Amino acid sequence: MSTNIFVPALTELQRSEIGTVDLPGGLNLHGLLDYDTLIAAEEFDFDELLNRARAQLRAFDGEIHAIIAHWDFPTSVLVPILAEEYGLPSPSLVSVLRNEHKLWSRMLQREVVPECVPAFCAFDPFDPDALQQIDIPFPFWVKPIKSHSSQLGFEVADAEQFAAATERIRAEISRIADPFDQALARVRVPDDVQVAGGRTCLAEQIVTGTQAAPEGSMFRGEYHVHGVFDMRKDEAGHSFVHLDYPARSIPEDVQRKMVDVTERYLRHTGYDNGCFNSEFMWDSQTGKLWLIEVNTRISQSHSDLFVKVDGTSNHAVAIDVALGRRPGMPHRRGEFAVAAQCLVPRYGDGVVTRVPTDDEIADLQKRFPGTVVRIDVSVGNRLSELHNQDAYRYKLATLYIGADDHAELEQRYRDCLDMLSFGFEEVC
Image (tube, rainbow, N blue to C red; front, side):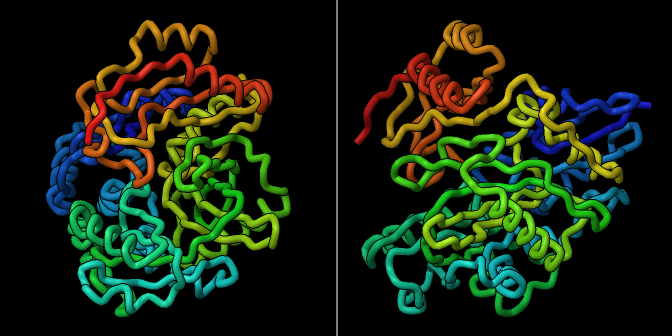
């Protein structure tokens, strides 16, 4: 009998990656709501989305075997609610929210792994005296306690930059903050986490070093990591442009410490029966290890890289856990020795006048077999009006590249950039 698996905001790329998973009896993938509703919408009403998802599941004529979250909020919080209602394996809602809420998460991190937690301070961005309440010296980061894809995160060096950042945050924070408040209303939030509700922001100490990300699962109390990734930023140090697998820039003993710190923290939050990916910064000069954040799902950015190097998408682990089965992943059975997700960035605003044609992409893929090209903009888009972009660069396309070694991988990335032609109309 085939297995029915529901994936909120299921995309064709996800469908193809999940197709690499070998499940006895086969699997039937079903989208739950869609990408435009859950990811690209101008605004969200969490309770309405939950009721629409419930109605779609009730209308399904068959058994529901698993519901899996691969996206950030609101999907990440909808799934544990729906899974509990259907008696399906999933992390508890409160454990997910403890991780999703950046202030709550930082406070729990400080309780169990304080040596890895940067200095932080909560503030209300609508308070005209907010800066006076922050006891972290400039420069520091400011960001909402809940956002999407690093949006509304700013490095500020003085009071003027702080004022500009908070002005932007005040204008845009409600898109995620208001539905996040609806989700938080379903659990008891500690008094010292409340501050300004979903509109709370954090000021955080800036940490530097080499960044890496372990990914794994917690299944019935069994903790396991199935991969570690390098996370490489651009020259300015603000935005990610390169994600390499397997990691090679971090010593193995430091990777083991990352794995250990993540386990200690997740157990402290009560997280179980789910996947995770954590992000760390390691300062090779001082030996200091900083925990950046922990996400309560596999990373979609990792999926094709696992296929290229290990032979199967990390969706295999997510599916196993969601079905109540001990997860397993093949190791180094893929076509390539190394792989990377690379971005095609642009650092200034503009209106898109040209994107690579299908023939140009086909030529690139013929030259570099196995390369996946995802164009993330369309003709007519103004880059500054696109959702889910970070504050320092715009993402034009995403490339998934495999190679026999890292030198070849770097060269293929440079060649792909040369082969992908975009056009822009400059704007004031």
